Length: 304
Image 1 (cartoon, rainbow, N blue to C red):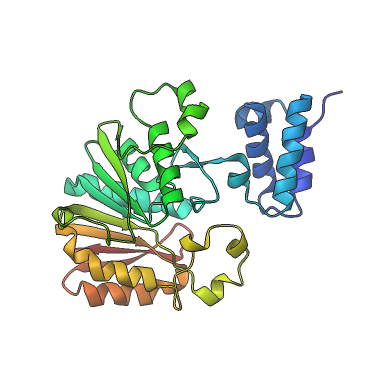
Image 2: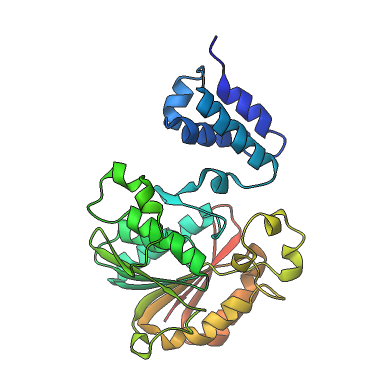
């Protein structure tokens, strides 16, 4: 007798997941290799012994508070499947909105040189390269482990690679390559603490600087579930949550071209404080506080 496996999994996830039905679909799709649409159209199915074992192992990890993207090793962002590990922050929908703002600005201003500070999984540079032509995008991160993931993702989505090859184990090996060709754009990743490792010749060469930096105040972070679930290095914003943003705004003018822009993702509680910093460091620029789709303060946009 076939089982309504999605309902079974959803029921097990209900006690510790905010979206048990969706998580059940994503998990089962990962285990069976079927699409979520196929699973919804075929709610009754039997798993093989190997699939049952994978499912039980995954459920055990989820019950131990390991986030689903880390359990399955990948996550979707801006329509792209990305390799994910606990070395990087899990990409959020709000950051997809940041990508949308960046693409709109690049199209309107004929920008081609982009810097993403705190690139993590590389989700921002790769999404930009897949959706805008002739870009030169640089992603920087302080973490070498995060950059390993970013390079794997860039290699996975590089031009000329067949879909079946992108999922092979070969593409999950560490890559030491620095430049990747994605559509007609080039993407490269550099290890750097903000701008500290940038060579002099790269100053004043970026039309657009993007950053989704750690922005949770240290004391607040220690009270949140995410403190034990995702890398602290990608979350801890210092005493007031603005340490990294303050330092970036201090250094950014030396690397931003004239008539350029800076776009920052911020914590919803930092709106006025982050805007005040933008006004302090860029008093002659057009500085805006922008809300996300849920109406929360989420982005600072500086246009010089």
